[in-house]
Amino acid sequence: MDIKFPIFLKDRDGWMCMIKTAVGLDHLEKIDIEQHEYVGWDFDARPIEIILTNDSIAVRLSKQGTAGIPAIRQSILDYARTAGPKDIAFNGDGIEDLIRLFEAAEKHASQTDWLYRFKSIFTKVSPK
Image 1 (cartoon, rainbow, N blue to C red):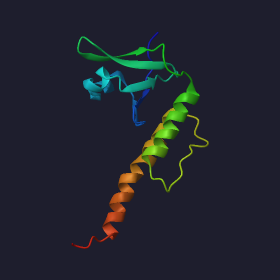
Image 2: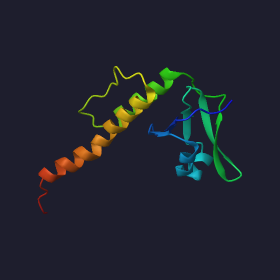
Image 3: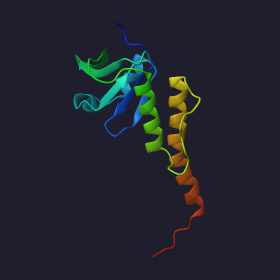
Image 4: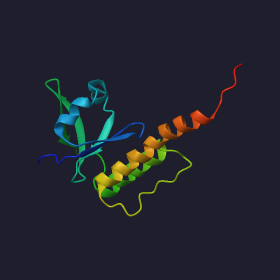
């Protein structure tokens, strides 16, 4: 069976990425693949694993891992809550499409950097 893109990957720290096509696999670091850093799912919610074959990166179905949309959805929600600002809630209610949910989670996660930069403009650091 072929892997259906996009795929969703979660690393050991709970950070996630969505890879839209097989070409996007080239952005992964080989050392992370060798160390089995990622767990993931294809778009049909089947568990996948990232492997090295002849020094190139490939994806195959995995016999390990939790299959199903609820597993992906929960991982995306956990990622958003971990990566995003703690003072702004993210629950993803009403977003059933996994791609839209992931994009909303990424947007939420990116608010941390944006909020930090915004707050730093208005916070003066007194010299010591």
